[in-house]
Length: 224
Image 1 (tube, rainbow, N blue to C red):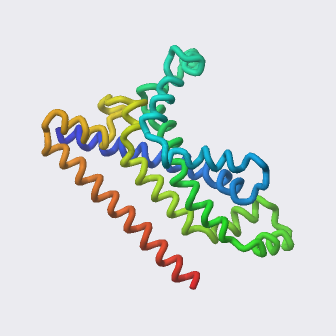
Image 2 (cartoon, rainbow, N blue to C red):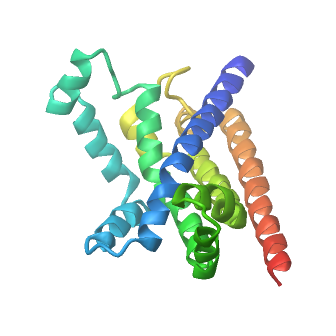
């Protein structure tokens, strides 16, 4: 039983770490586009990014399950190429990336919006390219937003339930993460093990949020 608990927690944090890494790569250019672009459809992009904040997880999970089902066009294409996303760890990653997207994008977007335009102009005047300006000047200056996004996305993925259950089910060692395990153990009236999972997630979530608020407070102090 102890080995099952450890494997479930390892899988939970593995999913959160992979999801967070992918989101960081996606979120920086996406947040930059939202802040600096002036195209007409920008509000549509913002809406799509923010939808997971108000959309029931089961809705997103259901449509992902239908999309990745072998009977669908996408599912058939993936199956023919040896890719299985429904009821697999890879499917959990896809679902988690989509559902945790705003938790990474919004802090970075907020931090980018506060960067003075003069910083960009000064960098361009010194001969820096847009890429160099972003990587060497802007990103270091918004590290508090990056850290907040990383921590919040990680924490949100650790606690996600609805999307995970819909697209991954409850397969031990493959898709059974801690949030699913709690539900399963409660249904089995195994409250002691459910408490062990729940207390672990409670402690991790508390520590993560405390870190976010501490870092944000320190960043505000540096700005002042």
